[in-house]
View 1 (spheres, rainbow, N blue to C red):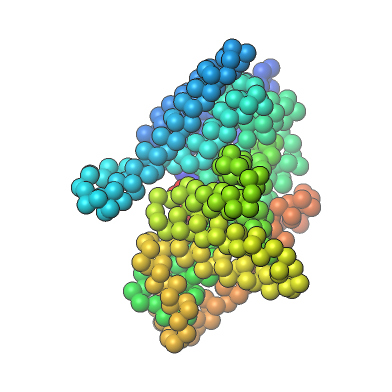
View 2 (cartoon, rainbow, N blue to C red):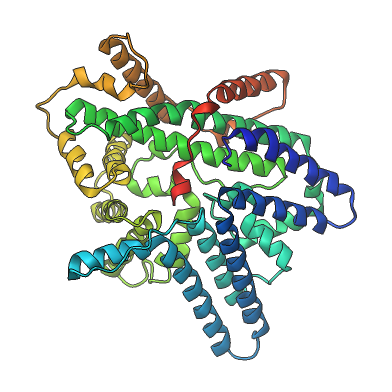
Length: 477
């Protein structure tokens, strides 16, 4: 069950909303928290019941360690530090086993000519997200920045379903006060309308836009030997697909949160309008960037230990970013190259201050587009092939571009398909570069008849296309 599925839109979400607000008539807010936690666990277990026991065990262990750290406060730091180390080892070990076991075994086998067996472990959904989230919680308790609340409140903090599978990576300090605020337990129709609007826009982005260009991408990576034009169309298509896929997910998560009077942190802010790779990371997956800065970059020393050490810290941070995204060298190289470009930008200093804004935006976009090839390609060999073709100007294979749109329809000349594909990419480019994003539009949203009609139109168009359901890209991480 994903946000963009029939069972979620027409069954799970409305039932949970109705049930949650019906319980607001009871005296204690704990009943609503218990109901929402149970619904979130059902949502998670719906994918695979085995996943459910993993996240429950993770919650119990982390909460127990946090209580232990809190209990040892005032009795010396050795016990508290030991418990924190135990918590870090548990979370890193859990993530490492499920996400990286086969990756490391494959590389050990390749380097040392061994024959260790692979386990082909199924990655539990959202494990990278809820592991990072709980690590941040343990560290905040260790630093005495927060106090340990009830087990129910903590469970809701981890499992709150709008952010459970693919973020945003939320902090204990920004969620618990909202959950405990008695004013938020009653329905707020303005919030609900705003949330519905943001959700509808996100659904449209995912189903109508991202899944349309996904066809070009999937077909493109099935081409054995792409030419210059085909390689560029495939690369640009994925650049648009992941933009609208992740943007759509973030919108839907924020929209659902607003329906429950919960403000999730902004996680996406028009990243293709960035004038540098540094700025790109301030706009793309913003809560991941915050977490990496807080729990990797700063503990390594940040920029406090000289220029050379700063560059090393940046390199390590983006290496971790790549590895966090996936257990493959394509992801690692993608992360490392982002780090390298950020280091180069720092080395350049103010050298490009006089460069026109649009030139910097276009240059940054091209770099990001090239690096997305590494992110999407099934292996390093394929990614290098596509990158090579993108800088080989000899083969202008316009006559093969139409194959990217092959979805079973026949009878149309290839020129018509080419116009269709290029028109979509041009329109989407105009949207990402020149229009306001959903959050900006949501900030000025007013619940009127006109806005209701827009929501209805977006919703109906999206529902018509629900039959070609696909999961969000970040569900794989």
